[in-house]
Length: 476
Image (cartoon, rainbow, N blue to C red):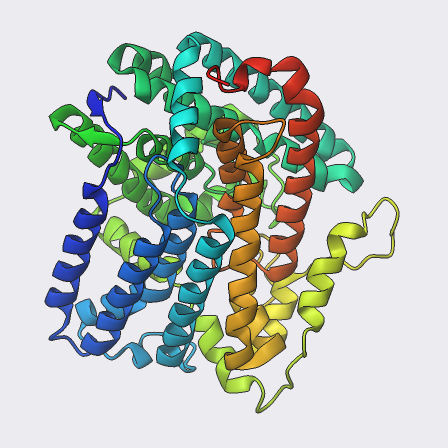
């Protein structure tokens, strides 16, 4: 993926582009049956983007907010496209419109919290990151990424053998994406020659991610976009083409995966109806290729519709709004307390700690909608979990505090005494990316981030200063 661009500080035009696209989308959808709801969606998007746009830094906050905004609002846009009221969109019934509004307000509270926790954009930190990226040959960043990939592979291998230690080992493996981000960023700030090496790495990561049980191939695309935005690329023709190609690749791969994933997962699990991969890599790739090659226009159109409906994640909240508190009482913070306490109760010491069964909990609070699937975990999502705890009013300050927690993680890592803004922002992005989905349950969200922060703190305190001293700012 060759990106030829003039890299300049400020990338101020991106927010303007977002404003124009948002206003055009609002104007097109305003005459539809959900025009006012779409207008609210656009207003919340613009407000969140204005709060979270940070030129020269990884757009992790904007990604967290933006992806969840898409999950909250896409059903309103899709309903307009179909010419129906959004209340009739969900096959489960429930208060879909109220769920969208509640989620949008919650996302605004999350954005305010993230901005408050992270503070204003730090131009000095951005300058420092650029100096560090330019202070080393791009090959050195590449070998650092390779070393992190080996560590990640080893950590995941050991995690499979020792499930009791899986959570910290998975957190260690996820640090690989911090080093991928730094390598990509260093490549983009240097220009086209360095991008040849990055292009090969990107294609390798994309190919290696194919054949898994889940759609992990999107991760490399997301972190590539983070690096491009962080580098402040002002897109000329070739760069704009590369960025557009990446966006098309994400959408197209999502549609294809939606079309083939059920048959593929059944094959990969050996018909066991579980999440275990029991078929060799070559056979899985062959099956993916065969399933993809058999897709026709009708299958692709159906998959595109299903993908939009899959991205939308407010329908379960709509059902819960009907049932809680009228049929089931609030939990008054019990779910949040469980989520916060779990990271401090490692399974190797607390063998009787209960398993997190998202599907069972979803079935309980929706009256059996989720069924009892074993091959896929179906979660209510963290925002629905918090609604069950606190109701529609008290939930907002709690979500704001959650956003503040994210912001403090980011600011703490980029300002760590024994680290640097480049390493800190890259590691923060690799940690916080797990907060980008509405469907993640509260216990998994809090637990995953807490353990990841602990692993990152140990790495930045004891490993990086000794073995990677060149990651410090050369001007300091």
